[in-house]
Length: 233
Ligand SMILES: *Cc1c(COP(=O)(O)O)cnc(C)c1O
Image (cartoon, rainbow, N blue to C red; front, side, top):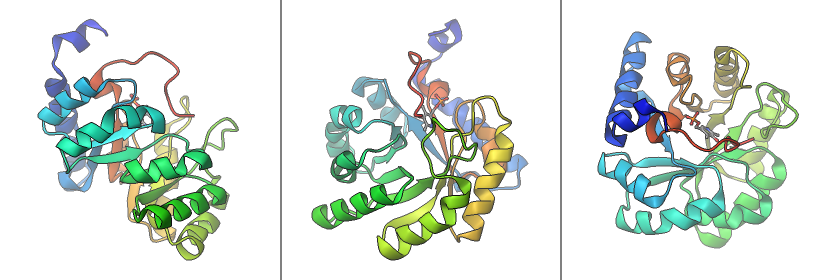
């Protein structure tokens, strides 16, 4: 943690992010309530998540099923209004565990995974809201369907697999101007009639709000720095 991290409490940092979100919304002529904050708690323990809950935060993001299984079942039992988002890549063999635990799956990116989620939903009687993750930068190492494949995958998710598909998600390339990627995601969502846009992280959530984000996923600006190599590929 840097000095400024430790000088402020988690509640201070959370309030600061919320204030900046509200300001970005006003600047863009949007209502502050139009964008929800997903607090990305990966690598941070349940006690730290509990501090965020005590400060009023209810929506959390995790990028690994197994890690989330270690901390959230007990918290969800205690706080039934928690909303948990899976924001990292999902293997088909973990789809059932993901459907059992998560309220929202943001990383649907291929037909096989859509099929596995549909099957798990039927088995468990739980239907998480889903986002399609789009690899807007067309980076070979990154998860997400290609922009050109998005319309077809939307159709499959809706018509063939009957997922509760609500929106699109992206993680722009680290070295690119994020606004180009946010604008592309917005265009793809609009032409598919999808209302939700999950875009923007600690470094660029205000830009994302200006460009229409309905969810921003903010980790380090709330919880402090993490060990490296944790960003979902
Ligand atoms: C870790 C992560 C975030 C949050 O990143 P910060 O820069 O810490 O805000 C957002 N989205 C995804 C998919 C992540 O893996």
